[in-house]
Length: 126
Figure 1: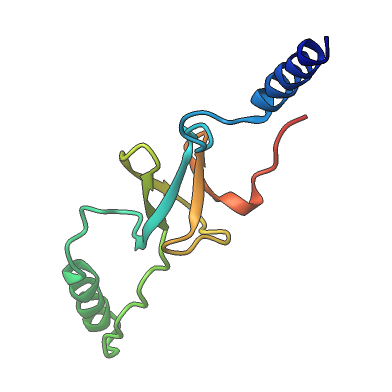
Figure 2: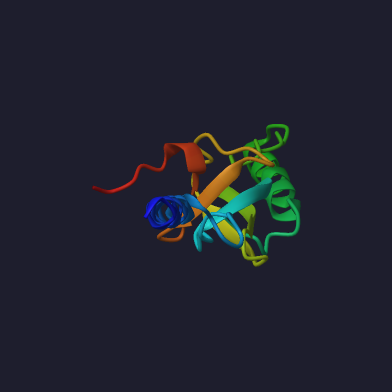
């Protein structure tokens, strides 16, 4: 009788402890929108504009017309940023957006609704 009780006790302990065991890979589930910022590059409004020859020529013509010396135009501020992100699944995406809001190269990020956000600023929905 003692043997049966001892055997039952050990069997019960084995079953309870097996529920605590983990099997296989303990990695979290893959995040389809997660990645790492690879680079951030300022981009102009017109990617096709190869040079400022039109601005220089316009300044010369305007200077001659007004009998004033031509002054070089100030460069336009960047119209946005091209942010290159390597996704956790190996894909690489480039997103164009107006601001970088806390993003930096080699930082974790998420691509949500066509925008790149720092992974630390993403909050879970209840």
